[in-house]
Length: 173
Image (cartoon, rainbow, N blue to C red; front, side):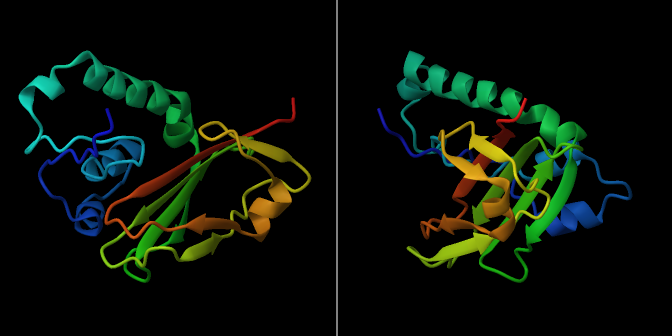
């Protein structure tokens, strides 16, 4: 059961939305980005069979997405925001949230229309701590803070609005 999901909601111009807010908060950013689907699994509500939307498998997909979000919600709510690549300058956007001690990093890369398939980008996560090992909680990949600082290589898919998510947690106690 592998459906590509795109939750269709009212389209929001993120830059316009953010500019319209005098004091932007994390919840405002999340509201503005609700129509972007993360590359876990997604369902096109407009074309999906209603029986699929009510299925136990679909409900488990949504429950898994909620559990995943809750695992890093504190990093978004309480962490510091670091823009890495603006969508107005590149065919993708990238940003990172980090806890104050940089023990957790949440990296998001969102591909825009026209992003070339198969290209790679190197994103430097300068807030990562040197000499520390991080483990991505979503893929299990381990990487050093020094490697993150030098630049994490991201392979782009070429799919519009495809998002790549990495939740790095320090393995240091």
